[in-house]
Image 1 (cartoon, rainbow, N blue to C red):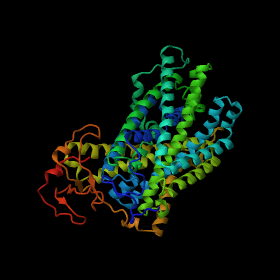
Image 2: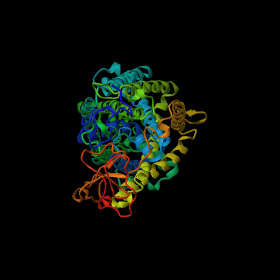
Image 3: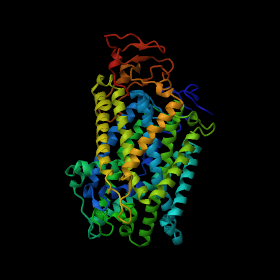
Image 4: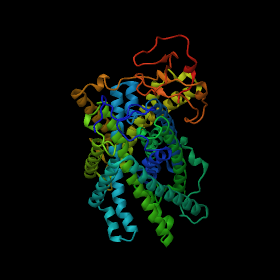
Length: 594
């Protein structure tokens, strides 16, 4: 089955934009939260990022302030999650940033926002596949196949295993969203249990005096990162820390497949970020306390431990007893399931972004194809898997060290499209946000601050990544491209490539770029409600019951109900019949909008 902007295949539900043919109502709130959390790959993200937050190239970066960096990185994540929720209320479209930025700023900005999502996902897939492939052999070694464990350090076989993981997870995503969600329940459960055991056991050993000689006792000062230099330490460390939170937006990208598209995805995003904050704060404190930040032994300042802090800390933490071996087995399983789960959930949002871009002709129409039985994006899903394999093989050939450092490049992409979403929220709601204090905060201040924070991190982080000695290989040689730090080149190169691809497609099919398939719009129309339904209060973004945003063409107006112009308060009963501006505001125009 093929969906297009003109045919709009599928049944239209009353609380979302026209369906693209995806399976509506497949996910509830709990499933969405699980998908959002699993997409961040908590165990893998911490294993691959914590060492780089503490130190860079063997030199201390955040040091014992790593928990503070993790806390600081949460702030823009929460603020942008608010922006995602508010924009999703207006238009629950699986294109997310692509669709919203196009509505707010126009087709060029929107297209680049969609490209930012695709580029970040493709880049990180190389890192995810490498970890999943390597840990496949490590896990089998922990099961007793010691000969197989040696293959974890064999570049060829770990690459082969990584490619196999991409193929498997692409197939799962192709088979249906419900199957994907059920698998995520199991994989996320293993991760969370392992992380809690790790943190509790580490803290018990620290406080009972049975930890390493260089272990540290946690203090509240660890949560204060503001004694560090912003440009050289905080910005690059936050960009790395942002990576560990990244992924919760998958819960929003599957909005058209949830039971309540206008509300459930946004709530899942907020809940996911809050749960991640608690998990990361606990595990980071425990890891820093037990391992310390020095270069001796399992110290997190040791450059040899940065690629996988759990693999470095685990043996010293759990020991060589039967119980310790079981704990190590669970820890290895958590990293494997985390990386493989994130491989799957990275494909999900990318395929749906490409689907939306295909529907609105921002990409070739083949990206809009939906499987008639599984109701999943077909060509978009398979293309994501194929491109990821190609990118993974390319960077494996360039430099193994670069695979681990791709986290920084992904951080630049994340800061770009998350920040753009924050600014899009402010501009989209620029007219109606002044109707209440709650809207000023949730649709203006929070998204704006989130966007500005990520922009600052992007600029200052890019400056550091561009230095020639930011990344070195095992022989101490600088890893550069064109004489510039490789991390910066990959990040900026991905954006430049996006501009080139956009210009080529613009020349081939200019309809999207002329505003014909996805025109700009603002929040002029809201669903008329009774006063009892419109009571709102300041608090979490889910607080209050407020009316649904309605598209100017009334395409998502529920049958038998009326739209209200947010500027004038006048009722709109048919497409194209917007009432003239009236100086007297309708009482309903003053209500908060959810």
